[in-house]
Length: 172
Image (cartoon, rainbow, N blue to C red; front, top):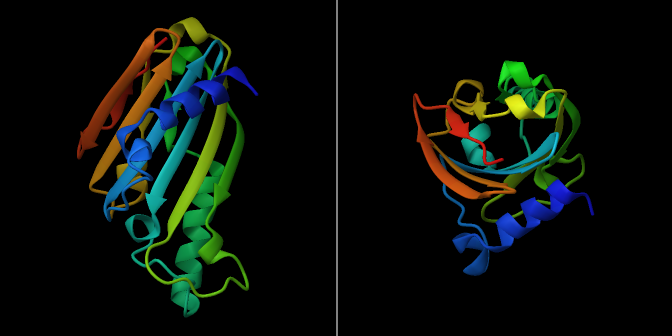
């Protein structure tokens, strides 16, 4: 297991929501977990589909299918969603997005549906890595709050971001 993935797993396992048996599903609220290790960091985004799309089911018409395509493309590109300090020269190496209810041929699901996205970034100048700028409020207008947890070699930090805040300190 990659070290930053191990840190992320430790962060998730020690979170109160996980300890209580799962993450709370709250519309308008997304969760971001960040693990910093050496010259790289990982970001995991967990969001109710309603917070990104306005619905939590398979799309029913062309307008909804277009909205799904746009959200998935935005998440898969990662562009502008998670920007580290420019001096750190970080680049996105990998992005994975999972939203089973949106997959072609998905069976109807009752209740709530989430989308999970994971990102791996590598930095050419890791000593310059201090903050992470989240562009989620601008990308997805339905988001009202971002709960962030950061784990690094020197500990953990929790932050709650509300508009217009968008930056979180990274633990190195």
